[in-house]
Length: 326
Length: 255
Image 1 (cartoon, rainbow over the protein chains, first blue to last red):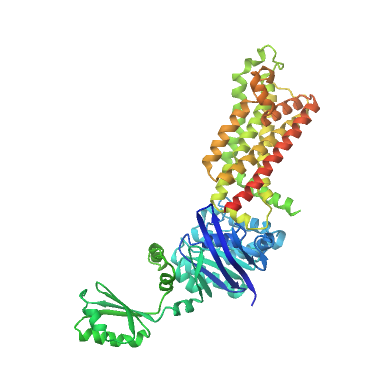
Image 2 (image 1 turned 30 degrees about the horizontal axis):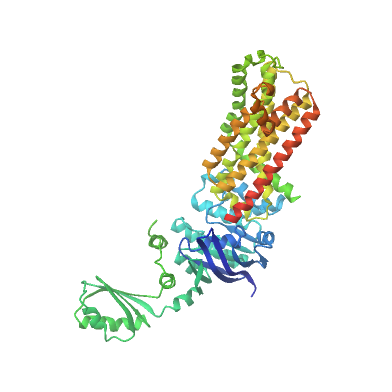
C-alpha cells in the first residue's frame, strides 16, 4: 500500500538548548488514521508543523502525499488540509466567509466553491449559522468550522492536531464519528495527535507514543495493549491489610504477579484474568480476608502509556478523558 | 494571476473587517479633521513669520495633516496582524499554497483605501475653510504619496509584528518613530524656518519627502522636485515590503 506520510529521523532544535524532536520516524499508509500520542510538550505539534510545511526541520526529512516537505512545500500544501491545535477561525467573519476565503486561497472560485462551501457547512451542522459571525459560535461549532475549512479543497491528507481538546464529552463523541466518516467515506489519510488515550483507541488504526521528541512505541492499539502481559485484577478488600497477610495468602496462587496492596485496594496482573479470579477469591477467603468487590480489566492504553513513557501521564488530562471532569 | 487573485481576496477580507467596525471608521475619519482644525487654529499666526511663503496656514497645513493621518492609520497595522497571529489565522493561511506577499498586500490595499477617503475629506474641509489648491492632478499626487508613505510604515509595522509577536513591541516602536518623524518634517512648519539640524534630518526623512512632494504637487509646482521624491518613496516602500515578506520567512523558521 502507498505511504501518505513518511518521516525520517526528524530533528528540531530551538536555540542551543531546546531539542523538541530528537530523531523521530514513522510512516502512515494511505487511507488510514494514524495517531500520535503523548503528553503536552512531547513533540506532537512540532511534528505536525514540519509535516504541514509551517516549520522546517533542523535535520532529517519527510514526504507527505509523495512530496518533500521542504523542497516541494507548495505541492505538499496543495495536497493537505490542516486543523491546528489553535483554532484558525477568523472570528470577525461569518462561517461561510471563512470557508470561502479558505477555498480561494487554494485557487477555487465561482459556483464550484459556493456549492462546496454550502455542502461542507451543512455536513458539519453549520447550515443555519453559516451567515452569522463566527465570534458567536460555541467552541464545538468553531472546531467543526475549522474542519470544514481544512476539507474545502478535498485534500488527500488531513492533519488534526488535538481536535477535541477543550470540547464537551458529547461534542467529542460527535467529532469522533465525523472523523471516522472522513476515512470510511472520503478515503482520507488522517494524522491525529491527541493526549486522550480513549480517543487514540477509538480512532487510530495505528498509533505511536511520542516521548521527548522520539517514538517510544508503535503499533495497532491491540498490539500495544497485547505487549502488556495479561489482565489487570483489582480487588477491593473489606478492611485495610498492610501486614503482609494478603501477600502470604496469595503466594500459592499460580498465574498471578505484580501484586500491589494499597490500603483496601489490591492490584495484580494475571495471564488469564477470568480463570485466576476464583483462585484468588478462594485463597483470600481461606485466609479470612473479606472481599467487597472484584474487577478484571483488559490493559488500557493508559497502562501502555505508563509503561513506555518515562514519566507519569498528566493526571488532570487523565481525568478529563474519562468524561467525568467536564 | 493567482498572485493578483490572492491579493484581491485578502483585500476583500480586510475591507469587510473594516466596514464591520463603524466606530473605528468614524474615529479614523474624524481624527484628521480634529488635527486640521486644531493645528490650523493653534499655528494660524505662523503665516506672519518673516519668510513664510504662504498666506493661508490651512492651505500649508493640509498636506502635512494628510501625510500624518496616513502615517497613523497605516502604521498601527501591526496590531491587527498580531491579533491574527494569536488567533492562529496566519498559520492557517501559511499552510495553504498562498504567496506570502498577498498576505501583506491585502492589508496595505485596505489601508490605502482608508488613506484615500481620509485625504479627500481633509482636502474638501481645507478648501471649505479657505485653502486653494492650484492643481487637481497635484492633489491626486499628494494623496498618492500619503498612501505610499503610510503603506511603507504599515509594512514595517507588520515586519515588527511578525518578528516580535508582541503588541507592546509594536506600540513601543511605532510610538517612538511616528510622531517624531512627523515633527522632523515640513508638516507644520516651512522647512527653511526649522532649526538647521532638523532640516538636515528632514532631508533623509521619508515622511518629509511625502509632505514636501505632496505640497508642491498640490500647488502645481516643480514636477522634477516631486518626481524625485516619489521615486525615493517608491524605493522606501519596496524596502518595507521586502522587510515584511522576509519577516514571514523568519517567522516560519522560528515556528
